[in-house]
Image 1 (tube, rainbow, N blue to C red):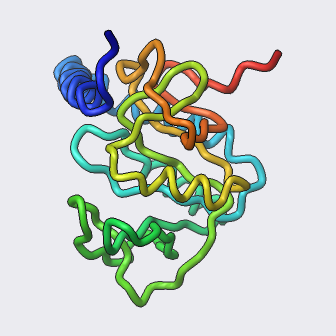
Image 2 (cartoon, helix red, strand yellow):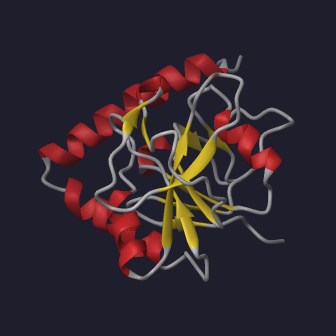
Amino acid sequence: MSLSKPDVRRTLRLRRRAFVTALKDAGQFEASITAITTRISAHLGDCATIAAYWPIGAEVDPRPALLAAHAAGRSLALPRVTTPDAPMTFHRWRPGDSLVSGGHGLLQPPADSERIIPDLILTPLLGFDRRLMRLGQGAGYYDRLFARAPHIRRIGLAWSAQEVEEAPADAWDIPLHGLATELEWIEPETK
């Protein structure tokens, strides 16, 4: 009997929180973020506009990667969410720009910030597998975005403890192009 998506999400939230606590207790948290940032930076290619998220709780923090991309002359964007059925959009963000509170505890650019389409999205997740299927929080914002814009490169950010043997996936779920953890870079297997 397999677990439902809500059960898997609950388990993965607990696992992720415990993993981050253990990293901090061992004094390895900053080195782990640096390792993830290095992996991301090596796989940005020629993307001019990089989108990411403002981290919540134990999510991997993409901000060091965003700052490195900004220093390299790339444009940055953060997501903006308004209502549960409205599509997530991305808006220009520069280090130091103010953010406002949004749904689901998000910090996001204000409504009047410039809307842009990124070349690459650094995406949060709760779980992943070696097929690069991503299990998100369940609101569907990223799934709908990926279906609407499959040409945008999708890179997941996760702790190694978030890996599962097989992430529950529905027919509409779209795999990532790559994924960075503190231990490795994962790409789709080629046959």
